[in-house]
Length: 225
Image (cartoon, rainbow, N blue to C red; front, side, top):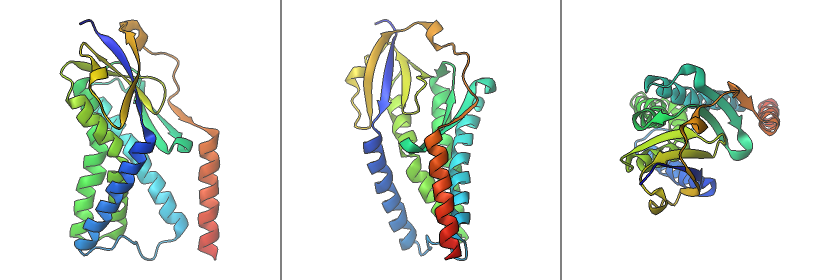
């Protein structure tokens, strides 16, 4: 079978349900381990700011993973689309299976599992909370990791949309069903289609700016009250 390019769309509604379930499980585990999830003596606005920075670092780690896996750092870009509930990192070039798998697991491992263990050992509620939220937020990364791991011959490319990606393979991916990922288009593979130019290094939507401003104002008001 000749190579085909499979445009895959994330089912964000299902992914969000999975994230919530993981967060609940992490909360139960944390309580059973005798550590509080509530960071004392920290204002709402500071907590919100720290959370934003932590989630942003999640994307930075994806970028580091891309580069460690062999991607050209000039092709790594970042963006924010809070109306879709996402921060994102993209690498605009065709990537090997090894490259994308390294990138997908980096945030989950570094600021999820490792920092959670540190937070539990030293009883640091803020670190435990952030790590738990990051593990929850990495649910789609894990879904993609295991989905791509099952494909023997595959390369990865961005589609240009934060909730889509392209898998290039000589296997029929329409037969690989997944409750969180749906193949929405199949195209003949042309290498030139995945040599990108003219992309922005950073992109934030207007709706994201509005959402951030509103949350900061709410946090400031709650701190004053």
